[in-house]
Amino acid sequence: MILRRLKIFIFCLVPLSLISGSKFDISQFISDTLIIQLPVDSLDLPDNLSINIIDDRNLPEQVIGIQQTKKWKYIPVDQFVVLQEPLGSALQKYISRDSVKTSGALHIKNLTLWTDGKPFFNKGRKLNSYTVLEDSTGQIISNWMWEFTIKRKRKQKSEVAIAALMDQWMTKQASVITQKDYKKRLYPYLYRRQFINWYDLILLSDGFIVNAHLTLDFPPDQQKSYIRGSPGIYYRRSTYHESIAIGGKDQHWYRRINDRLLRKISVVCRFGFNNFDSHHYSHLDFWNLLLINIGATVAIEYRPVYHKGLFFGLGLHSEINILPDVIDRFEPGLLLTVGIILP
Image 1 (cartoon, helix red, strand yellow):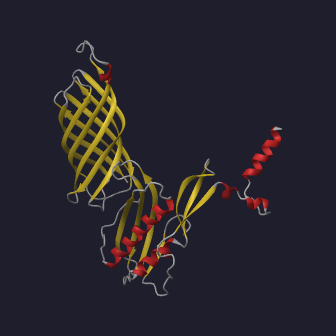
Image 2: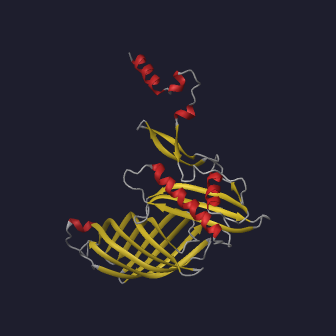
């Protein structure tokens, strides 16, 4: 009886191609394909091309990403995100549509599609890309680090959101070449997510706070302003109590002042636990064991464009303590930041 049920189960998993006589391919069983349609798919590629598009990625030309989905709603499989034509041909149509006169070669070094849930105010589908433009002699005349975000609408299909991101990127890429909006200073490292680890030391009137952060994000150095999110480990030490909170999503708004300095505004809501000096507090209500507060900082950081290594910051900190209610409701402090960037 058990053997019979097992045979029925295996039969249900076998693709129809096997039943029809074709050879069973396990890669077809454990993978899926998502086809992306672009506005230029119906256009013909012109014969005379001013710019040659070179796809330097380590993926097949039509594949623009790999994500995970569920087959038959239960089985997790890899899903290949593909265009109806090679990536270079699709981008070439955007450039030809804008009548770009520049001659040379555009290299697509990186294209990454992913979902970023860290920044609460800017979460959603993201596209990051790195492209390099050469003139007809092979001399590099510009490079661009792209970042686009789209907030996926409720019940919006994944392929629609990805198509919108691709359309934004390719339209903007063609536009900057047409307008000769060149970024001549080259990014000196391999374009990928960079490791950023930093520590905020906050000096209070009766103690201190240490807040540790770690992120892996693509470099934003060509942007004037951007938003990031980071989990943190928060520890507060005062004369008569200490607090700890783990996993709060700090929200950071960055704006570049010049090539060396950044302005950063951060906001976070924390939930954690408190420990008190029993010799100082004879009785405490049980809810005072919980930590609930809202923190905000404003800082200036020394973080040059394309920086690698240590960076520093100085600013002001403020907290509103909802719990525990046996300490000051409002606490200001002086913020000192030290961190490291590893591209």
